[in-house]
Amino acid sequence: MVQQVLYRALVSTKWLAESIRSGKLGPGLRVLDASWYSPGTREARKEYQERHVPGASFFDIEECRDTASPYEMMLPSEAHFGDYVGRLGIGNDTHVVVYDGDHLGCFYAPRIWWMFRVFGHRTVSVLNGGFRNWLKEGHPVTSEPSHPEPAVFKATLDRSLLKTYEQVLENLESKRFQLVDSRAQGRYLGTEPEPDAVGLGSGHIRGSMNMPFMDFLTKDGFEKSPEELRTMFQAKKVDLTQPLIATCRKGVTACHIALAAYLCGKPDVAVYDGSWSEWFRRAPPETRVPQGKGGKA
Image 1 (cartoon, rainbow, N blue to C red):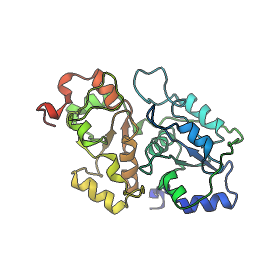
Image 2: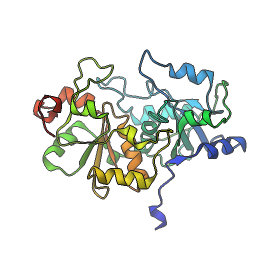
Image 3: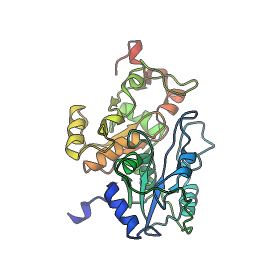
């Protein structure tokens, strides 16, 4: 029974504030600001430089991805990830707490949480409520840059948490995995355009179900309770005892599905890293469903 206990996926703002106050930041505990915003809206690194959780480092997902890929936000190599997070003072025994500054409470933090897990790191948590609630509750902030002592992080890819285009294509026939899309309903249905996308139509992978990631969060920006999350999965007829793949536009908000399922006791949700960004450009037309044009999932 003890072996089934999952590492806590969420930590509270109160817990983090107390940990910082009691001097626990260091090789055993590192904090990351993983904010990212659409170009032309907010500037994540500039906002980090102006104010962040004391001791936090800035995790730049633009630097920690496969920049050679034609698709958006694809995972970096094991060596690239290990080198990047090692320079942020993170070793294989570090407890990593991730947050972002999105007004929803969290947006990119679950992606970084999943990235650590897919590279074999178990001790990683998302700050529940994000920077939005850290500020609202009056916890301290600083503009001082963080200079953590570099560490050695050996990344080992866990392929069970990652799905490729070929595996998702094969799944259309085998149906071994349930496929859940976390984008907003209009984009999933094909009735609304993909934002900031050139040459990328909207719609979804044939056979996928829709659970918009925003629905996993309360209006105050916190993750809903496991009981509420289970009810949501049940309402969509998603069976948490069966294999599940999460998808979205670029493999980011799909990680909210993985996090929600993890909070319900299911730690093995795989993310289709290329997601719709890759599928739209590679998949046979009959596997793409723009429901707004008469298609049916």
